[in-house]
Length: 244
Length: 305
Image 1 (cartoon, each protein chain N blue to C red):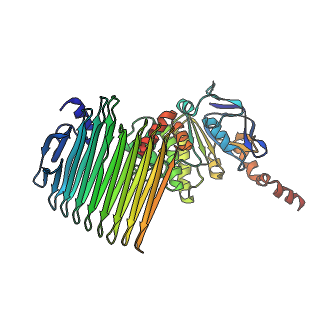
Image 2 (cartoon, rainbow over the protein chains, first blue to last red):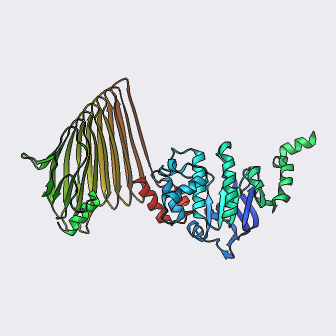
Image 3 (tube, rainbow over the protein chains, first blue to last red):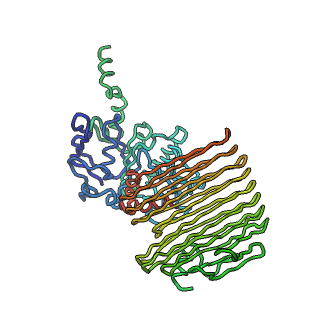
């Protein structure tokens, strides 16, 4: 179980500090948890804080009861946290196979690597020896990114907007990947997403808006309210509607 | 041959024992052993140090190994090797030089290689340079490669200097005739206070001639690299040259790709990119459980692979 206690984060802005996260406390139990909310609300920052890429200004993070707040990215990865970037990184010279081998943390056979690629809907033979460079499209990179997390198979897996940049045709496949992951992986899967279909397969949904956790409950309790109150995201729109 | 020499051969030429096919092994400035085949002759030059490698027309699928090893400190070795690659042949040439210097004097190898690639011939030329030894004497290699590609000839040149060469000046000059192609891939890593200068100049003289000159390098510690590359398009041709370098620590790299278009249908491109390892590359590999140092190694190994 992953627990965040009173996490705040501020970053330098033009006119002083900007508070990105304000006193967020949340417990992620085993299961499939979706985090949603307006753009700029702090979701990605929260994910980066869990992975150790950003350090919180205050607050603590616990993994199975152990305080991991001061652990590095590497140490957290070794303790079982995986993170799929919203914008996957490109590497000149490192092949897809290299990346999956590094993710698995051991020498794997080509057929094992291919298996992970097939799971994310890539025809493995065409990709295994390709470099993870600019010759791959954004959608291909996203799927390879997801495959690296599958290959790690850790207790906590965080995906930052996995659907971004993936075409509609491939989106159904992606849903299947996450459904399968929910059934097989067994740990905590946290997905940051705006997609209703992803929220629909979650056990619980958290809403983060303006740096605060505004809802966190079973999907059945959060989703209806969320879909009802979509105009809440825009104050101007809301005021206009009132005036009308 | 002693164990050091055997080890050097293994590193620069993947050779364990005697290779199959034609070969010429040069150790400490003298011939160590040689073999020829029905299609590939190797002859010692009479007028100057070096050999002629003569490949008969239509020779297909054969490999020639011509490694040079030096483990004697203070030795300065200069050779002229000429390669005559017969029309319509398709061969691989494995060259390379390994220096093991435990002494205090400079050990040096200057190889001047001239290629005559025949009509419709294909040749892959692989050259590896490597140095080792804990002596204070320098390990120096200054290879010069001159390439002449005849009509529809094709040459792929893969050179690498991965470790241990204190100073190098690598000069390459090439001319390409009608329909000919030259592909050059260079990999260099320098460390300590090493210096590496590379200097390519290619003349695309023929109609539909092509050249692609790509260098990837990593400069560590206080090392210095200088990359010069010039492609002249003297006919309807296409050329591309690229330098891609990673700098680390206090190293410095300068890159000067230049183009000369002397014909209206010459299409030429140059690119150069120099920078440190991107922070997000390190972070991505660290999220897979690698330490920062391991991540750095993987990125460099991949880059120079």
